[in-house]
Length: 263
Ligand SMILES: O=C(O)CCC(=O)C(=O)O
Image (cartoon, rainbow, N blue to C red; front, top):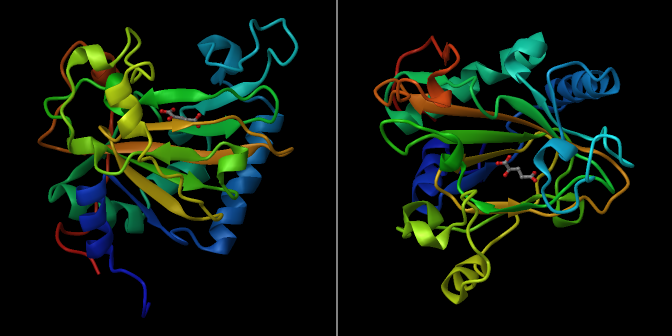
């Protein structure tokens, strides 16, 4: 479409900045169908679920029996739980985009992310500054997640904050705490965090971000649950390390068209 950056330009932005928003990646009808499926899955509390009380991030209920203790954070295994979610994970447009980024055949991991993220008013917690590489054990630190906004995402309802260029910054291990959150008590870290941006996402927008991009998210101060579908991809030459959680589940190869530059 005239006036919009090409996919290749978006990929270059991801390489340079560590993230990029692709507006309207999913058209209205498909996005509405995904949202309807997401609402139905949440309403029925379809397992497997991860609860805010499981993670104990700031603002989470202290236990499963406390007020809000049944607040869902992630509906796990999005790929396995809903055919529409699976179809989106391997959709041709997404496959082409990822193949153009990795310049090889692409696999989707089912070991982490692979979820419908929800952020609830009141009991949805804050997520501290981190790099998603903390979840992964791969030969190379080169994975890309796609975060599909099923509804609007803005600072007030807990949208992501990301630090541009942080995916290429080198940090000593002591810049992170024991849980691999980027420490906010260090002046040098605070200076980096000050550069963060929170891109507003419209329903159907996709945020692509690198596994080393520092990001965080606040609480949902609105009165509506926020829904996002999140998957992570890597190139075939970048294997999960044997015996780790990353290698614990069969991956999904994104088979199909040839590898090359996209529009
Ligand atoms: O929505 C949030 O609170 C942040 C989620 C996130 O960064 C993650 O799951 O890695």
